[in-house]
Image 1: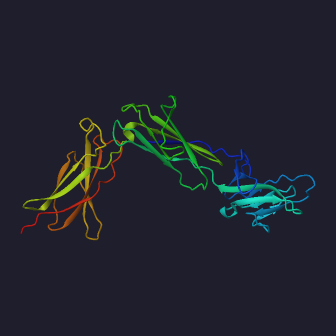
Image 2: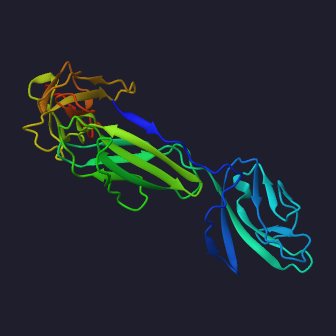
Image 3: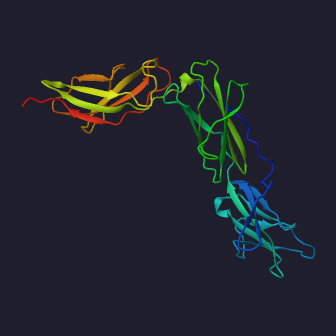
Length: 313
């Protein structure tokens, strides 16, 4: 059984985010970067109004004129209503008398992260644990991920190694094969609008999933018009097959437009004779593998192979 624990989303209780703005060099002067959540009823863009200036003029992408779904407040700030991606732009406030630039801000819109949905698996006992995660909703913002793990809820925290900074996957190299204490993976999604974390608990035997079997061959059997011989090899990534044997299931079908297929019962052998074959028909076959003790999941199906039973001349 897998458990997923959700941690609460931490967001400021205001209409937009002003914490730690970054500053971007643009054509002239500096542009403040401001982030806000899509769909908010109101987002405020501030303008530092100097003494002697009684009103301000706001422009979008250097263009003067009415601003869609917006109004200027008495303090000079610009209020945007029911924000959508169409309102993501550079805004600037000016002295309406002289046109002097007072402030520039680029509004970037999106969503805070969701709780990551995590999957962990290993292709063999003794191989590293590979974990991946995703979020169902596009945030429209650069979202990075931090990943750590520990052995047991109170164990020492270690880095789950990611292939690059902020990647959506990581690997754990040193795992106790037969531990009854679960490992705990902690993945935190971070973007300018907040953070969201998820804990994923697993035991090694729960997440075993071999790679597909390899080198599948289908051949006719002389003088047997209703049989086909199948042979394949265990996945080369499966370590120690003498200690951890695999079992296999076979899926086979005739490409006759019905797309119907049959599946055999599991076998521990790496060869099999299909019986009841339709003479002269071409069969398409695939094989999947699973730990013989029924731990974890079946592999994906192997690459297909095809064959036709022996036909008398």
